[in-house]
Length: 357
Ligand code: UD1
Image (tube, rainbow, N blue to C red):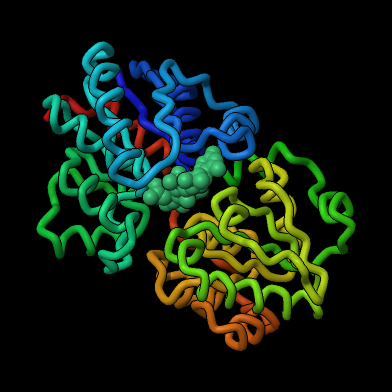
C-alpha cells in the first residue's frame, strides 16, 4: 500500500512523525509512505528543525507554496500538489489537523478521485470565522477514513451525519510526547538553559490569525503577559507571524521574546514551567499531559476535556482574567486524556487492514 502524507505547518510535522514512526516500526507493515511538504512553513525554526528533532524522513516533494492569503496559498498548493499526487498514484492521501495544507490535501485527493484519511478528525470550535474550522469541516466531509482523538470528536462527526470510516484512536500527539520525552534524559536541566528555575516561570505562545491580525486582541494579550512577568519571568518563543505583527517592544516586567524552539527543547521547558499561556491547540494538551496548568488565550477550545478537568482555563484576551488564571493553584488529579500513547499504531493497523473505498 502506498500512502502520500501531506504536511506543511509545524503541528503537522509533530502529528505525522507519530504515524510515520509507527509505519516504520509495524512488524508486518506493507505501507510505503511518501511525504509531501507544501512549504506553508518554510522558516528553519518552524520546519527543518522539526524534521530533524522528530526524525521525520525528508519530504520526497516540497511544493514551496509559501505565504499569502489563504486563497492564494491554498490554490498554489493545490496546483502543484495535483501533479505530484497524480505522479505518485497512492492508494490513499493522509492529511493532518486543520491547516491550509490539510485543506489543500483533502481537496486535491477528492478532485483526482483518491480516498483520503484525516488524522485528528471531528474537532470543532463551532466558529466558522476561524480558518482552521473551515479546513477541518472540509477535510472530514471528504475523508474516507477519519481518525478521531476523543469521544467528543466522534460525537461531533455523528451530529454531522458522518459515521462510516470513523475510528477513535486517541491523540497521536500523545505518542510523540511520550517518545520524545523518553529520549530527552533529565529535563530538569532545561530551565537553567533559559536562566530560570523550576516552577518559577511561565511559557507563552501566540500565533492564531484571530489574535495576531487584530491589534486590539494582540495588545491585550501582551499587556497581560507583561503584567504576569512582574510576578514570574515569561518566556515567549514567538511565531514569525506574531513577531511581524508585534510593534511594541518595551516591557515593564521580565518578558523574554525568543525565536520558536525545537520540539524537544520546548517540551523540556514546558515540563518544568509553573504555567503555560497559549492560543495553540497542541500546547493546551501538552501542558495538561505534563501536569502544567494552562491558560488559553481564546474564548473557546476544541479540547473541551482539558477545561472540564481544571487543567485549562479559557481567559480569552482579558488581561485581568489571564493573570488571575495564570496564578491559580493547579488541580490535584493528573490529566489522563486522549488515549494511551498508542494512537499511531491504531492508525497504522486500520490502514493495513483497509481494503479500499
Ligand atoms: C498555521 C495554521 C495554524 C497552525 C499554525 C502552527 C492555517 C490556516 N493555520 O498558522 O492552524 O496552528 O500554522 O504554527 O493553516 N510565516 C513565516 N515563516 C514561516 C511560516 C509563516 O514568517 O515559516 C509568516 C508569514 O508572514 C505568513 C504568516 O506567518 O504570512 C502566516 O503563516 P501561515 O502559514 O499562513 O499560518 P500560521 O499562522 O503559521
